[in-house]
Structures are given as structure tokens and as C-alpha cells.
Length: 313
Image (cartoon, rainbow, N blue to C red; front, side):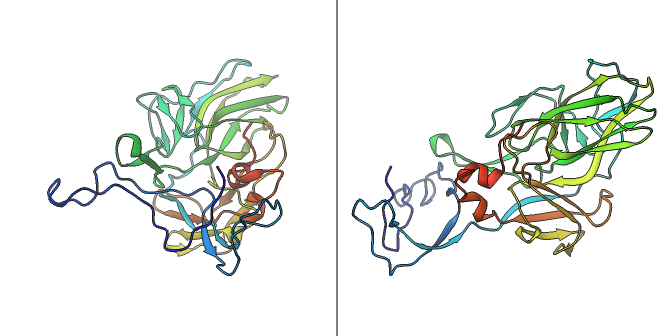
């Protein structure tokens, strides 16, 4: 569909009900909010509409505003080294047993969960960080729109704790990001210590060890490193609060990794942020994020990969 230029005001058109209908309502019950791809902007009206066939002159020129979006608003649980899997002796090639009940910031779903837009159905054997994803619904029927619920979208990096020397073994963690895309991270395990993923997970589906194991206990838990919903190249794209204090310049920011293709050993495709002090089940993270236009307009990535990072692996 070709893009057309419109003079303001150009309002969205929606159905309206006659006076007196449904107790005087002026809008049909199916009405929902509107969404735009890539944000909004101010058009420079001095530029005349390109009505010809030029492939270099734009139809519209102006100042883009991708928006500052509320993406996380929740209280992370205190990190716990066994939140996903209690201490157990692993067997190479056999998935570790994940926790049977919710607690320590990890949720056991009571039913299979379909996640959007990735479409992955996370089974009840999977485990979610903080909450099962929720989508706020507006409208009904064909005019229905879903909005991500910022209270349920926290992603966290994952820790693997070894009691013995497991440096001759690896562990492969398979899960999903907050958009329901499958993701994997492979780590070389530790010698009486902890290794932490560089990717932040929304859900964990399985954890499988390979190689020579020490025969000592291993557990899987949560880290104080949170995933970003949009690709971020610099911390100035973030705005918000940690424990009711503005988080400008605080904490540790890690930019999204743009390696193509992503692999099980590369970092988070959007980026992560570590708070300046530990989660304790009381400090609230309220995060707003502005998409980064240079990535969105880079021909290597295009709009979708530029906005959400390269494809998960």
C-alpha cells in the first residue's frame, strides 16, 4: 500500500452510535485503542507532497517521535539461587527438575500459556519470572487490541550454582523472552561458584547439562539483571525509577548485542540493566524506554529487528 500525505487534522475514523443507544454511549462497545508502527512525529508542512514517481524524494519529511513507553512497572523479588531449580545432582543429557510450586519470584503456570507475538505455547512444565504474562484487552471481536501489561513483563538473567568443580561441563538453558520467542543460552559451569547468563529470560522451559560433571549439587536461580523490552544502544534511552529514585545514570547498563545470527553463546539482543543495589521484594522498578532510531532505520536490521533486536537463537 502506497503512503499518502494528508493535511491536518486527520482524525482516526471510528464507528459512532446514534444518540440514546446503549444508555447514551457515543462509542460502540467494540472500540479499542490505536497503535502505530514505529511511533509518531511532526510533519514539516513546507515540503510539498511528492506526487511523481521519484524514488529519492520523500512523501513526508519531519521530526520522528518514537515515544517514551512504560515497559516495566513491578517489584522484583529478592534474588534466589534456587528459585528455578533446587539443589540436585545433575545427570548429563537429562533435564534438571524445576521447582514444583511458585515462590522466590518464579511462577509455576496452572495452564499452558500462549505468548504474543511469538506464538510459543509455554507448557505447565515451564516456569515464569515474576508473573505469567498478561495482556490488557481493549475492545471486542475484530476491533480488539491487546496491550502488554508492564506489571508482568519483567525478564531476569539466570544463575547456575555448582557446589563442585563442573568446569568440564556445560548447561543449556532453553526458554522464552517476554514476546514468546524461543531463546537459548549455553554456559560453561563453575568450580564451586556461580555463572550467570548474559541473556535475560521471561520463562525457563528446560535446563540440560552436558559433559563431565562433578557429581555434586547444582541449582538454578535468579540474578539482579533485568532485560530491556526494546533494543538499547545507550543508557540515555532509559528513564524511570528504582526504589522511587530517578535512575538516570545509575546501575550497570549493557547494550543489546547485534551479532547476526544470534547464538546460544551471544548476549541479550535488546540489552540488560543491573540496579545499583539488590532487589529485596520492596524496591519497585518503573522503566520507560525510548526506541533507538539509528537502529530502526539501519538497512541491515529494518524496523522490527531494529526495534526489538536481532532474532533470538
